[in-house]
Image 1 (cartoon, one colour):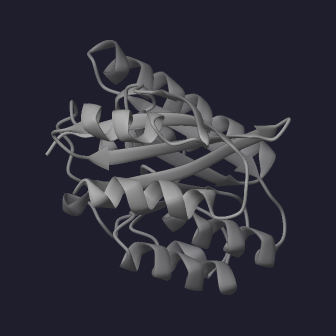
Image 2 (cartoon, one colour):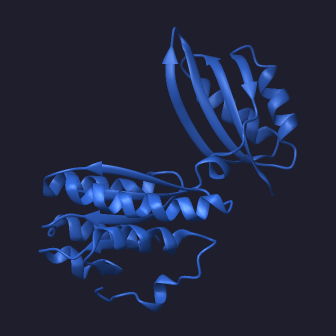
Image 3 (cartoon, helix red, strand yellow):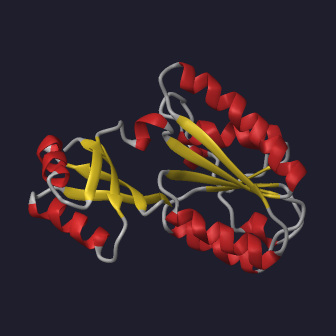
Length: 216
């Protein structure tokens, strides 16, 4: 079943999302993604991705609703921004990992791949652990790199939870127990970014399972 995007601009009111999703379900379309954008002057932006061969019929049904001001059918995010690599940690280390990841992603994206790199520099065990756990809620997140000098405790627990939900985690070689919880430990931050992208790229001949547990 093909995945299609639907972007709606609607009059913002209570129960709007319930009404829209109900109409989509009534047509037998599977709702894969729901994201809400900015609301301005009482107009809400809502984005759906639906699995349905009859997306045009879904769009027409939504356009007929009085709350819907506009309904367009953009390409789904997976075909625009693609798989997401998330990099979390200290500012200098995050920048170095991101540099390697962006350069490697560029090689694959030139050949038709779609890989994006998202970063956030953070300090504090609780703050980083919270961000790590949130990765499982990010659409299209495919891998996580922890770029820091000292991570452990609650962060290591969060890493195990994320890995348990199918997202591989790569860590820089650092002090703390997080290196024992990750799939792979890499000393060089540029190399960590490159390897992380290769692990999620469809155009790369690389299997993380073959080196899982190693320290490079």
